[in-house]
Amino acid sequence: MSSVTSLSSVSNTVRQRVTPEEWEVRVKLAAAYRLAALYKWTDHIYTHFSARVPGPDEHFLINGFGLLFDEITASNLVKVDLDGTLVDDPTGLGINYAGYVIHSAIHGARHDLQAVLHTHTRDGIAVSAQKDGLLPISQHAIAFSGRVAYHGYEGVALDLDERERLVADLGDKSVMILRNHGLLTAGVSVEHAFQQLQSLERACNIQIAAQAAGNAELIFPPAEVVAKVEQQAKVFSNGEGPGVARHWNALVRQLERTDTDYKN
Image 1 (tube, rainbow, N blue to C red):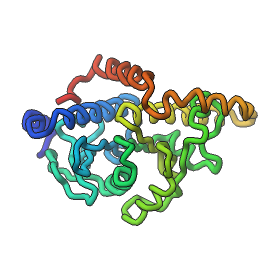
Image 2: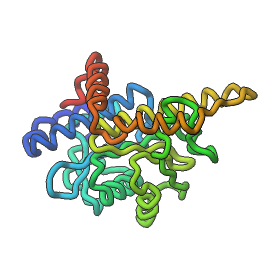
Image 3: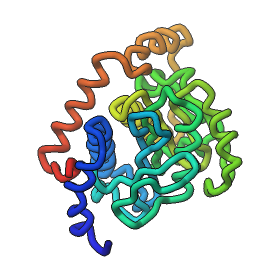
């Protein structure tokens, strides 16, 4: 297909051939892409969000390689299996192989996680390049204390054997900083993964801003305060508290003031 307009024409046929449960996930994942575009977290066509397709098959949804985040809709998401076979590609564009490697690794190993979001933002990469990683200098960052995994840079993720190391480094966590590369959050739902990503991006923004002051000495809260916030943050970290839904609903209201096309 040669245009976004022609891509939108597949909406009705895709909705007719997928389950209502899959369509719901498609709409939420498309909203996550549009929100990322709204917040300027994109790296042109080179990053990727994914979500597991409900049902017995090991399939997940991801963006067609060549579409901008603000062009993603529920119907033009590509369905792929864990072996990389394109199950349903309405775009005809295929997928970013590096995205397949990263997302298939996590979807294949962590069935408790339904969505995986990955960004290449300026401040996210800047923090990923720092030896000490995410510093506990803000409320946003402290909420991730003890919950962030790190994965060393191995080059563009084109080698399938890197999947084992990605999964090993992630362990039982759902948030990971990819060294010299970017940020990755996962969740029990698209809503949960996005809430974690937004908070992590904000923590990185704050860290880079604080460090930009040059000679100013950073203040690190006492260990007992960090431990207290770790406990308080659990209401968000497992994705099961009411705050995640409220956060997502507010995001969707914000998005739909200017953009409802993602639902097509």
